[in-house]
Amino acid sequence: MHISDFDFLLPKELIASRPVNPRSSSRLLYAKNNNFSDLQFFDLPKLLVPGDLLVFNNTRVIPALVLGSLVVQGEPKEHWKEIEFLLAERLSLDTWLCLCKSPRKISIKTQFSFSKELSGEVLNRTSHGVIIKFQYSGDFFNLLEQCGQMPLPPYIRKLRAVDGQDTNDYQPIFSSELGSIASPTASLHFDHELIRTLFKNGVKSCFVTLHVGLGTFTPVRVENIHNHRMHEEIGEINMEAAQVINRTIASGQRVIAVGTTSLRILESVARNNGKITSFKGGTDIYITPGFVFKVASALITNFHLPKSSLFILIASFIGLKEAKKLYAHAINKKYRFYSYGDASLLIP
Image (cartoon, rainbow, N blue to C red; front, side):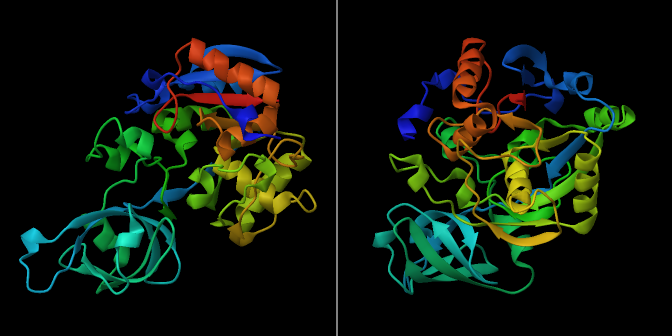
């Protein structure tokens, strides 16, 4: 299949730069059996039944966007050039692949200062960034909280600057496991009141972890979608969650993945025999049309970029023809797109 099959035209004014408040007041496009209903996200309890299982991704976004001052011996600090880095992938305890503009202009062994307590040295270069070994004393992530910003996607940062409000807006309310460089955005629609209502109605939940990284948001740059290769992302499913998921499947009840990341780790673990086992490690699962889903019977997700691996996943879940109809409906009804946008509940 060609990547052009997964293209669509999105008016720029539909790209959301801020989330709605409260979170559950976002819109919800309900798609079942190719029929669409325009609802609000707080209507979700009316669409679920007792015994349904919501599977959340409990990863927590790190403030991975940092400014580094290029250390020049003999020059005052105020003259040091600042370069923005995105801490994209942790390679070892203190070493990260950091994306930046014009990495070839940065010399190996160059020193950068990120704060009084955090500095780093360039060990190597790649086509998209540099590998930096960080030097610090204390807890790395605590230091990063002090000098870093939320790594909002480029399409939002073209509209406005990152600010303090994003520190809360870009985290799901139940995020706990540090490690993502992007939010599992389907979870952003859940607030405490909605969660209480769902549980009161007999809807169950469990947590898995998939740290969102390069695999999720790297563009598909090949013409034939099957030639695209996903970067590995790290995740975990504990024994308790595995047992809950397997019992739900065995009882004939629905497993509803909250977000494409939850769906991907579920299907990655189950793709051999259809069973969920405890898991800790990496996955580079890439879901394309023809994929046989063994766990998820429904998916809650935002509206994604054209020609992205995420839209390809949506087309794999409900069919390409149906996915294009869904997005055409969303555009016609002026749903808000991407990370801070509205949501959909998809039931094939």
